[in-house]
Image (tube, rainbow, N blue to C red; front, side, top):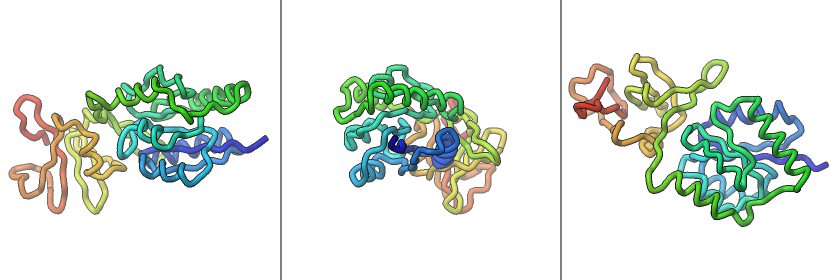
Length: 241
């Protein structure tokens, strides 16, 4: 029997590493590769390598929604979608995919999805997306248009495991020495694996806005040499620190 080849396309580095570790534990005989969490990087890899048997594909990549990856790469692979967005956990993904996994990914749910993949391949062989169904692509497009979806939570890498930080609990973000931090309303800091430029594409501009240190004025936080994103006060439009 040929060794199963799997690819992980994940925009959050800790989540990609954890998924690789979980997959390796559940299926140590699989050949697993973690690809760049971007449409551009993943499409380039697919142009240069044989397509894997299965893809664990994050719906939200660093440079867009994964439907663009499917359109450009035309992957000849089964797909399991992964997402940190509750609103993206859509049952219709069974069209040309096996399943979806909501992050943080549960080991038992991952095992169920793998077993489903193995049952399908044993019965039908490898179902490809060489001609992606219009239903699937339209579904993915509708996720991003016409109403843009913004990030509602982050996966944070803790000492021993990942945990979830809700955007609604964050007062502001700042970058220092090329590291991005989220600061909660209680003043607790969390490291975010995204630059502020990437955050600007994923945060709702009606809730957060960029603020340069020169314009901070009377803010109570220390802001020297920092770039920041502040939460707006819903009633006054002022920053909430």
